[in-house]
Amino acid sequence: MLRANVTEGTPLGRVAKRYMDGGELVPDDVVIDMVSERLAQPDCQRGFVLDGFPRSLAQAEVLDRRLGERGTPLDVALYLDVPEAELFRRLAARARPDHDAQILRTRLRVFTSTTRPLVDHYDDQDLLVSVDGSGDVEQVTKNILVGPREVRTARVRRSPAIADAPERRRSRRELQVGPGASDQPHDKARDGRRRAGRATDSRAS
Image 1 (cartoon, rainbow, N blue to C red):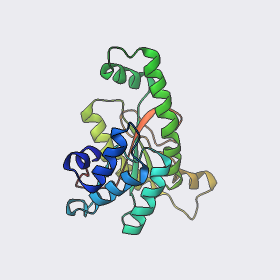
Image 2: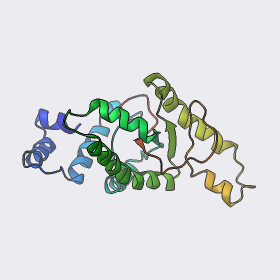
Image 3: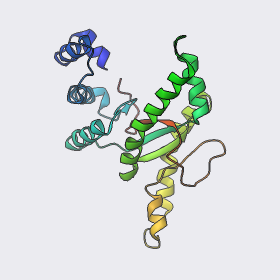
């Protein structure tokens, strides 16, 4: 989305390019404006998926506010849960030849430290669904499609009238789906990747 705005020379793209040309990060408000403009387009009216955004708690909070003003709050935040060893293997396969193991591990630690506040943010809003992301593309895709349906079913089946404190907490826990998964709270401290999005039949890009 950012590259598209820059390539097309949109007003926001020109603003972003000034920061990028100077080696600076594009400010959150510029990125959020781009996202807001994209979500206002006709193909997003029936739903959308945000892939890789938001990337920080500050972005998530502004996004929540913007979507609330539009009356289109997020329905679910998907957290793709992948063991650290598998993440390292995938990252190493894509890394530049001059990136050694320590550099890759540092990148993983930085990713985890910035992701955790987002996980907690969406967990507190009862939006978080943890999906097993360690399989092949076909299996992970299936898990993503099934995850929101599974967690909604679990919430409907829960009776608020008889729920004790631990049960009430279940409505804010992560539900892991996939081969070998069980309906148990999942440890958010494990490394993984997350996606945030609104249940959709169209995709924001």
